[in-house]
Amino acid sequence: MRKVVSRDGTTIAYEKAGEGPPIVLLNGGFRDHTIFDQLVPELTPHCTTYVYDRRGRGESGDSPAYAVEREIEDLEAVIEAAGGQVVVFAGSTGANLALEAAMAGAPITKLALHEPYFRVEGYPKPPEDFMENLRALLADDRRGEAAEYFLDKLVGLTPEVIADWRRAPLWATNEANAHTLPYDTTICGDFNVPVERLAGYRTPTLVVHSDSTSDWMRDAARATATALPNGWGMELPGSWHRVNTDILGRVLAGFATT
Image (cartoon, helix red, strand yellow):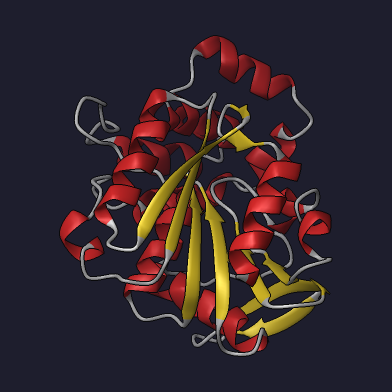
């Protein structure tokens, strides 16, 4: 992978592919750049894609003290490597991070988000001691239990679904990256849609959600789109927290190149 150095000296690893306008793809919780392995080929005939490992994951470095500002600087370093102005597509907690970066002034020409992790009225937030309990599990190196706790209390999955996750091939990645779950929790802040702050952000923003996702994710996506002056929402075919890759690729390619 290629490397850039973030402002605090942390090395961020990324891959570049394709031709056309640059688009940076930003992943959410548990994952590294490989989550976009199927999406990248859909985009490369139309765009130059940049996928990177967020700090603490894959081939990227990390720092002893976490702050959302450092992750914003990581994204800005990748944007600089991509030419200085880009379209960004971000999903899950990565969508929350992309919004924070955008509102902090990162040079994003267009923003596309997939199901940001907000909780709107009618849906419970994680318990107040969520972060404390998550950190305690990680301090004891109980990575699998920490991953389960995150999926239960923050994502809202049932025990049966979590058990299915544990049997899936990606569970090893979930445990390997469990130490970054406090990062994603921090990024989400108080889990409220920041309506007043979003009202001042005027960059064109597309917010997509799957037609088969959780109710809270669907309603969070719709609320985010509504709060943005130049935002609009789009429901696309898919499964839980996932839009069909070929359809998403066409939508993003059109969004990035027009």
